[in-house]
Length: 122
Ligand SMILES: [Zn+2]
Image (spheres, rainbow, N blue to C red):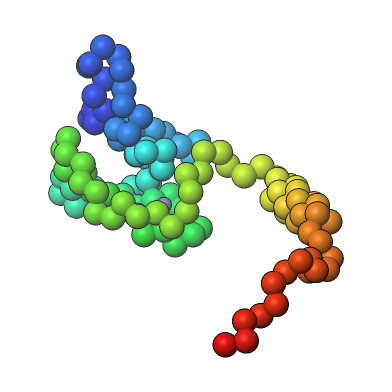
């Protein structure tokens, strides 16, 4: 089954859905950089759920019937996840975020400027 339009001079729209095989050997659909896992097969209709359904309770869903793909819910509750999170990366991200927050606090004035206007008396 071919969903992506690969016949137009080799130019594939990155927004077109296409099939990939995950590292676990399961078939997935890639659509707008989001991946969908096969959920239910009924007759010639297959339902697909966002691969982040189990992790983030993402509600995005698709269905395919022969060569026709229908988006049932295109709303993801997360950003595109391009890479599997490496071990320790979450810790490092948090450390970087904390360092950035500390740097911001250092730049903030400790006292309110004396030039601020007095409150209106009305
Ligand atoms: Zn999603």
